[in-house]
Image (cartoon, rainbow, N blue to C red; front, side, top):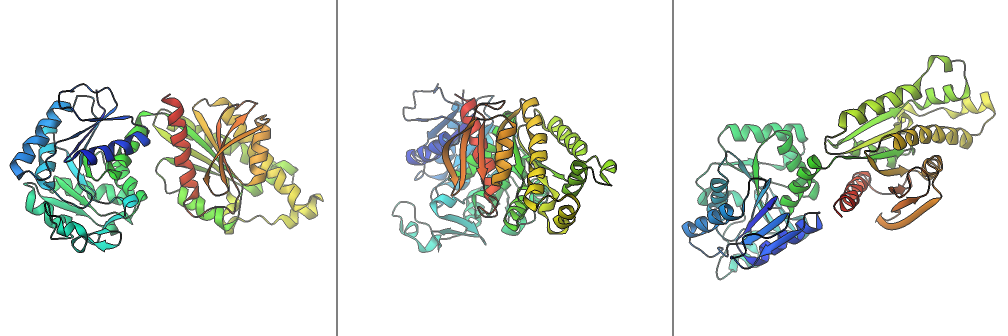
Length: 441
């Protein structure tokens, strides 16, 4: 029985979204013969071939398709709409809402970044050109006279339409969740969302689930996939562990971005206190930084266990300029070089990380930032080496450890100066995908 049901107004559109779902980890079947009512796939896509139908006939086609293929365990309904807004948008969205039969909203997201479709400032842009200035405006069967999805929906749907604007997205997920709930309480069954990037799509889906807002998806495919992946994270339970030892500005900006993710917890080690402890300094007896960090990590691992796909990160507090360590005083005190002191910190972080990785079976993947940090962690885990498999980004490498207590575990290693602000988030998403592939084999 399908966990995801896609209803499109033409066959190619059904296939387009189905293949996106397959690539996202939800094997799909596109129904060609209407007599086949029992397709064996987690995701089923069906076409009503209703783009050129009159509104009432289009409504009936979608309503009947949802009733026929939707099941009790279908967790996600997607009303696939044309990427240039052709067809019976309002009538078909209404039909899916009515057929599902509860008080869900329709989250309508016309954006499809991979296909050059961006919806902002109440205008759908196709490769940078307003929709009503593109070839779609001259379509002989379904011409488009406006670039505004709001105008089309307001004229076609029987339900009130609310809007999520770009500025709502920029204020974070809690604000967006509150805004979505407010629109629902105001009676808006259709909520039209502006968005520009894949991250925007995920943010909308995560915010809706954060708000516990029941919804169907209505989009050209990209948002439905984002929503499916967010739902999937609630069903799959595992953790990926990040160890960040780099303390440069690039790593700091990446950490700041990672900290904004709702599925990520970060524990910062007091690097100066660790050095005092490790070197037996005059203040060392007053510090218990390693014990405190381990306790914080243990508590977070316990709290997130069984709550979907999560990431937990251990990072030195010295990554932020105000916490930079003055190595010179330790060099004078101990006779050790800056490199030797840094290596000592790396070993302490690696020891702590490895002890957690080997005792918490829910940790299924690793990330290490900084060459020395990665070496220290792999050595502490007893790995003989690594099988490099793929570049996540240039100079960020995904592979599998060989030997030791984490034999075969997925790992991504990256230099501290490598990547842009989104690289750590991209690495987290990559690990999620690879682990999911392994778990579904």
